[in-house]
Length: 190
Image 1 (cartoon, rainbow, N blue to C red):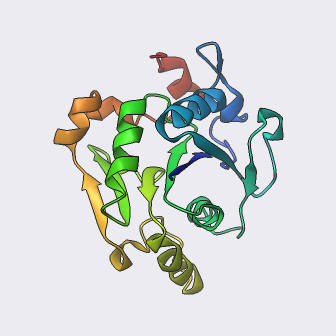
Image 2: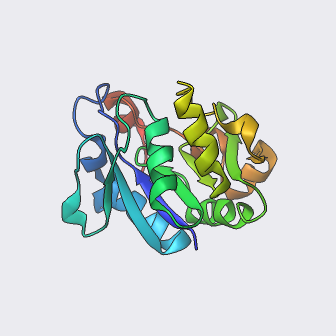
């Protein structure tokens, strides 16, 4: 069974405040991500970064197992806390539809990792990672390779390209990050 992980561990420096708690639709960006992952895979956990945060959501919360290694810490923690595949969704990607999340979870049955390739490049924080990635991530971390894609040469990665992404919406906007106040002000709730 696939476990969904909301990646909400960033420091939100460019936003100037915790972006996970920004209003979105009738709730927050965090609640929006939780809702979509629940629909996609049922079981949801929160990745809170180096400190435990968001325990008020009533879900399991996982702080980074390793600190000061960047975003790969979230992938590592998710894989260590999951018995099966882990479906990651960054909290600042509010336009990723449930149907695409379900598709990623479905495809990871036949691959070790399934990663959308948007017009901006790979989207490793909106991706599905199978159990085979666990050891590959550990090896990358052991050798000091902290890039999110550092372990990809050691696993079978399926890229979901623009043509398939287009069946879920405009590939140019599906992965619009809300990193700054300007990004947030320009964003339109679905």
